[in-house]
Image (cartoon, rainbow, N blue to C red; front, side):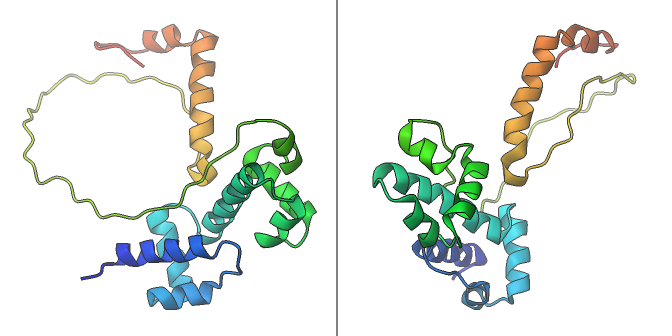
Length: 186
């Protein structure tokens, strides 16, 4: 019996096979048996990224691979991956990878990989857990916060830099001093 994770995986495969074509959201919705609106909501809810953002990131990731491995022309890549001009492609490429296509062709630099999604159903919690309840007095927890988001992987970039800044600033002893019980830790 086919579940909707299987349908989403088929949808991702269809997108992968058509990254160089115009992808109709109406067609994707029909493949899944949903309206375009409901497909986009479902995809965002399950994948954590919008359908348009996913397709854009996959195209830019694949374009970088082609630029390196096949030495493709930048203009050809721009039109192959649905950009109206090489300028708009260059702008999107730099925003995504941090370098222009021309810089990537000249130098060996780090770029982003955005692999295809894969959906699977995993059910956890069927095993028993041994635990005990311990009553304690009230205690303080102290820390520093950083507002961030999972959108475009922002938290994966911002949190390590934030943690490094906290360590280098010497603030950890001050934070630990605000706590009033063991175990102390960050």
